Length: 387
Ligand SMILES: Cc1ncc(COP(=O)(O)O)c(C=O)c1O
Image 1: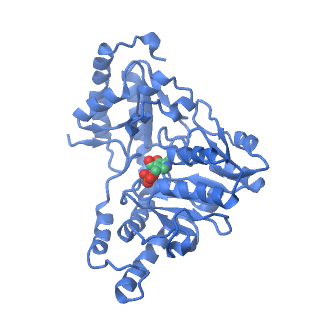
Image 2 (image 1 turned 180 degrees about the vertical axis):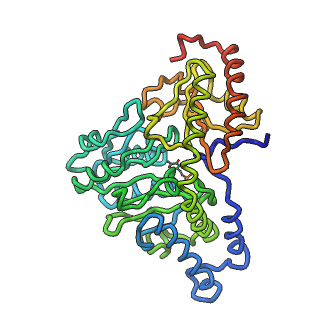
Image 3 (image 1 turned 45 degrees about the vertical axis):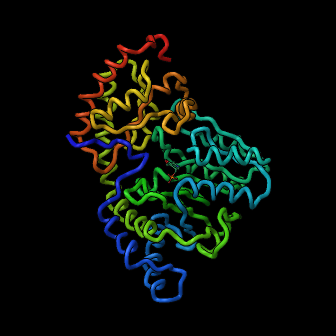
């Protein structure tokens, strides 16, 4: 069996069509699109086409799409940008955001801004009414992600943005996990700011975009040039942007088909794991979870040991904890949905993609339960400590 990649929420392989589309821009089409000479001007229409493609997917005018270096920069640019334009005020976000949002908000809190973190229940879905309660007269931004990267829950951003709009507060959504996988038209999301990235949809790494609705008060994060209408200075990552523009066309074309294929695969994985492994908890709301993602907490074992054992069998997954980022803290998302810190450390995330097959899932279900049995037999944690 070839290696099995079940970590698509972390990143995805570059699509061959995307790579082919990028190659001329790593060679003869090297010009800077800001240059008036023919080298620059030869690149310009391709650059414009890529922006148009991203804008079409967002249902937005291309002038409102700003290219960035990826999801993290887009989140920083959105949140710091609004905060810097306001000078002071209060930000509402949730306990389950990506660190690119959470750490940006807590950094601003140290600089004198106020922040409220809306909790989530065990389902991992934000209750829009909790957002309403958190909004204050001095609230300058509400930021709630679309699809959670760890447990896959889909958030009711439409309802939340309607509440923000009623209160006259701009709404940002981190759509890094949903762009190209679910509909993300900005008017349907009700969003003023949307963060997206290419590498989650079989595009290149290091490129993303921030949608900025016309009229949103925002300061640029990166200054020093006139690119992106002065909203993000610096010579653009043209090969990356061209690749992003190509990736989104393919992603949109096969979006529904992949979704429909993932639903039974998720069911198979969830049922197979639940049947074969005692004391296993599947995290997130089964009805409101994007079908690529299965977050499974397995009592009495460290996530890292399971990950390494699976890797030796040629299966790549990720831990549900923040260990992979060098921290021993349990995942903030799992803790927020009520998973105990010990159980959170024993959590794996399986994230499927366009190349995932039923045979691969069968193989996971064949090799994983014996790994759990073996590791549990060696574990110093007894059932009562599994949390
Ligand atoms: C929800 C979410 N936001 C932001 C990011 C960061 O994106 P990037 O890796 O492009 O900086 C990720 C990537 O893991 C993500 O899943």
